[in-house]
Length: 149
Image (tube, rainbow, N blue to C red; front, side):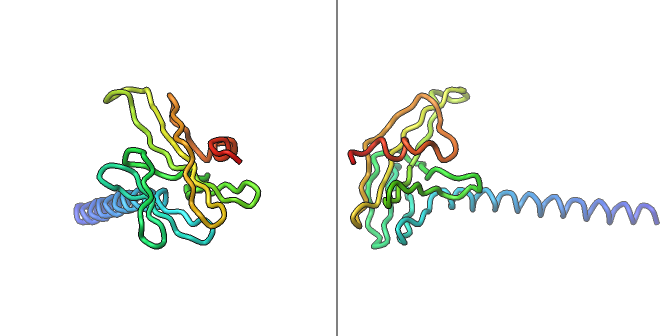
């Protein structure tokens, strides 16, 4: 009797662990997808892989090359959602690419560029490069300082 109960208990435990592992994998996948989609000025913009280069898919399905390597992502807020900074009435996002100097190296490098929606047009900034990896949403100067206003 006790062996049967233990077998049932162990079976339930294993299926619970499997279910939890599946949820974590699913959650990680949807987080990555969230970091590659943003709504700016009522337009949904999506980051896509265009021959190992990062590109922005606009609502009309055309691609804007960003001159950054793939993979790339938008900066994210504390809730893990893509962040849109507003300066004046101009919405701005940052697209990031991270890389390490060598495999298993603690050194991290980042490249990023801001994209603003101004006068109904998407405009990319110059590319900024750093010898560290930017986390979180960044400071407002990261969004605005790469443009001429």
